[in-house]
Image (cartoon, rainbow, N blue to C red; front, side, top):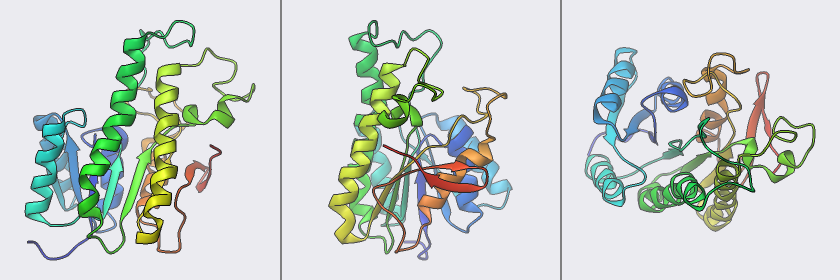
Length: 250
């Protein structure tokens, strides 16, 4: 075993928000495990962080493949024996070609989003939970979206209100939020904190350079939740306004 140090696993960390979350956690002297399903891209991301002076290790994990999850758990178990922070970042994002309106969204598309953005997150969390229970301050952060907020989506003036809603993506994030709330209640007696983080529309490859928030800004809620003190919140949903992290309604 290596000398005891805070360890964080971020799924989908080879680029975009996942990579920036790993970078910001690494700058806090946390060892970051760069989770990615593409070995070449994942190793390149880990090497990039190492070149920046960040303690980083690539972990091969495809969140939709149970065998891959098991192998990743075995690797972390053998090398460290515990996990302090899990950031469930990897997800299926909407594409322009997706037909996501409630009246036309197909069964297969709904199933695809639910399997990747909800069931896979549950599987990963359950698989790593025994290692998180060995942490002195376990933290689980689920990357969500305001699109998964029933309250905000029901408001006519909200950015998603007047537009045809993308039901498959929205329902998968709403389900993930419910997982956050119920798991937080279960794990509260153990001191493990579980929260959802909303990065907002960020300037990633998927969203584009005209998004209102930089990737650095989008990563802040997740990083804050990953590092909260023992008296910090659990079972909550946070986003950011300007330089501040604030509550999001469910």
